[in-house]
Amino acid sequence: MNPERIKAQALFLIDRELKQRLKLKAAQEQRDMSEIVEELVKEYLKIHGEGNPAYAITKWLDEADFKATPAFFEQWQKWKEYLKKCNRKELTAIESRAIILQKECKEWFYENRDLK
Image (cartoon, rainbow, N blue to C red; front, side):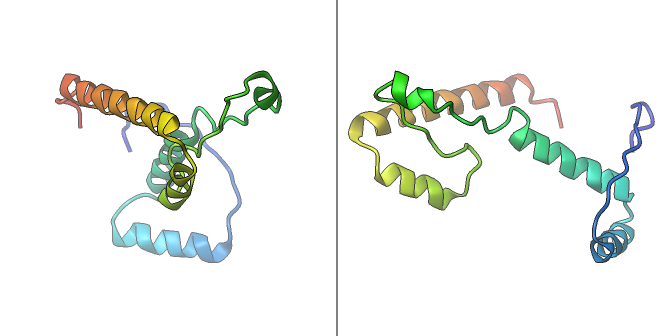
């Protein structure tokens, strides 16, 4: 744990067997259980932090061409099924977004190359 960061206590209940397995694994890795739980919470928030917003039902009524997509970190199989149902215009739009996202990621990694 980083002693420079202010920490807060959290109390939550988990299955006893899970806790025991976590305790053993943490000891094997010479890590604190809190450190592991914090790491998992960070990962969860990274994926769900801005939420997987539900689309308002009116979206389909207000926008004739509106089409919901799978969540970004959804299982690849769901994306494959979704893409099979897309037409050329939709696939082109998805590809354009993917290219922009890739470009932005490359720029971010370049600008932050000194970060760990």
